[in-house]
Image (cartoon, rainbow over all chains, first blue to last red; front, side, top):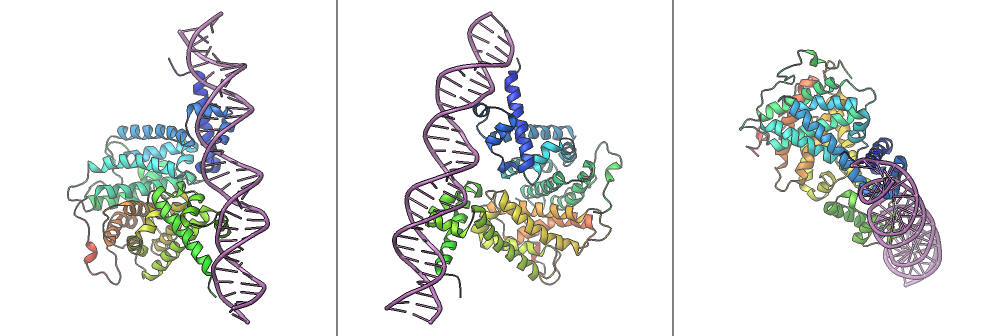
Length: 207
Length: 207
DNA sequence: CCGTTTATGAACATAGCGTCCAACAACGAG
DNA sequence: CTCGTTGTTGGACGCTATGTTCATAAACGG
């Protein structure tokens, strides 16, 4: 038997309220009172479902994390296989992910997302790095994720954003040479084992 | 005539209180009441000097920003000339900068520092990028700063950190190849116009 | 239809913020 | 040293937000 319809309705409403409010004022500035008002529910109702504003957020983020793991597993071992999928996902669910990844996100949000990405990237790199690598993997991972999050954040806030596969290409172009040089990995920026014949060279002309 | 001694004493105390508290609990968790208690001053005294917890923070950050600009100007045009100086500065003023750059920093802190670095890096890259660069400068800047901040943050929190020049070398190793490929810049990772004969190849063996 | 689960709203206790003010103390210029 | 100026103090106040509690009413679904 599925969850009580009232429960679903309530949680959905709270979830939506937080996301839209985050888009308007940023996570930190959102108050529980506002969430309640926007979701049009009673105060006590909120606290029977969640302990916190943060609790609501984490629930939302867990869903995103699951999605990313699934993408990683479905990307057939390509280096940074999550990347393009994530750019595309942001493109589709722009509203939600702009709230999470953009500048209005807040420390809690970013740290959590960072952690998810760090795990993904570490597994990616561990399986490829040469034993005589010049740079410790942990450090390389931080660098990659830092760069990725910066690109994603800017892109999420961008009003006339590049198409996802172009952002993915830019990311690879910027990051993979350094990783290759530092970890002794051979993969080229346009590394693509199975599909993607040539179109992923869709790099921008200029700014 | 200099500032009234009482004023100096008070501001100093507040400043120190915030930094030590940030190290203990992180910026977000610090309350004005705690600052007051730690600084051992009256509540109203705090508000005659600062409007906010954030106001105190910004004052501190402005000092750091000034330092970075000075370093940039003194680094004689080397690509990412601020980098080594900043790593070294963090090394010396570890306490202060760990509070600012480490994971306990908080969004406000990181955004402000990010802005400073973005300005520095943009100037660095603008003067070098080829007109036919494959990636827009703004995007490259974000990527570099994202990577740099990630390294700096991890390093600031690290208990047995690498020496500064080694971190600087790692950063260059990781970032410069991608930048070179994307912007058509010629500089090698160990780019060094004047000094630094060969010792900057001080890269780590392994993790 | 009826027992069970949710939703509700109002009341309450608590914490932090920022302001105000009148009394007091420290400063430093002359 | 004196005195006008400036800074400090602490406590009271109003406000916003948080999280809890409870009795009542409504919605659920088997």
